[in-house]
Image 1 (cartoon, rainbow, N blue to C red):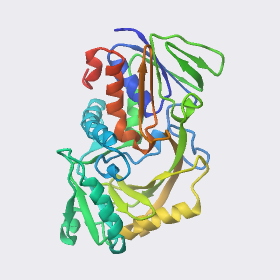
Image 2 (image 1 turned 135 degrees about the vertical axis):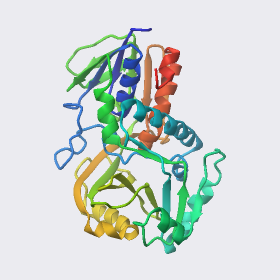
Image 3 (image 1 turned 30 degrees about the vertical axis):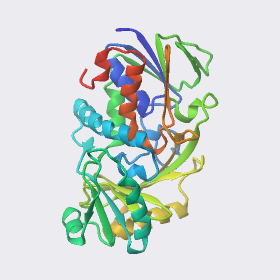
Length: 359
């Protein structure tokens, strides 16, 4: 199929990774997406108007995700960490991939909930899976900006990426690729897709990575995610932080030296409206409880979007002749995408060079 034609339905994270990989290998790629353009649209009038990959903190936490996910997610995640390192380097984004580990914190009254999480994590047999307990002096030495948590653990091999920078670079640097914005794909069949405008382009191979747009072909539901962007000059945080709490899954991720992203991993709702007062208060209160300096931070952006999930919350990779479907990445999009793309390219019988980021 060298030099063949590829059609991709969906220009989110998966679609951009596929276009970048396939275009670099010499395929002629066409990507179709209903969005008005490649950039994210943040703000009150932008909720849900861009790919879910933009509304993410970019945490690569295969061990921490074992709290609720299965071993397949963790195994794909460990592979993806290595792939993201290579991808960021190939894209020329120095800050695109950072691997200093991540932290889990718990308040004194939440130790029981934290111990249940740690018990589940301890079942992992992966050689890179370890959670190291930190005493207060060690935590202070690692992250002076963190105060208030009674218990802490370091997950040394986890990492994080910059979603906006990587999404932008993947689209801009995908060679041999035509991007068709304002084009909604209605159905995807082997070798062809039907567009809302009545067109039916034909290809040697098609990929369906539309997320929630794949309904009703797949039983996909949207899971709401919310993120607050905070500006605090020289905040000092260097690692992602996950606060273990009986009710909330709250995380803090340093985006740059002046920006911290605060979010909640999942809310079972397909509401695309702006963040509620309750959500914002709970998110920021939890963040402030472990990083008191955020009291002086400024909220620069609130973003919401829907992540695609299947009934079992497991990722789907279905490869049939001339058609490959990937969906259901749930809240693990950035953790799973590179490994799933590599598996998809192998499954559809693509050239060996497609399985190497450096191809």
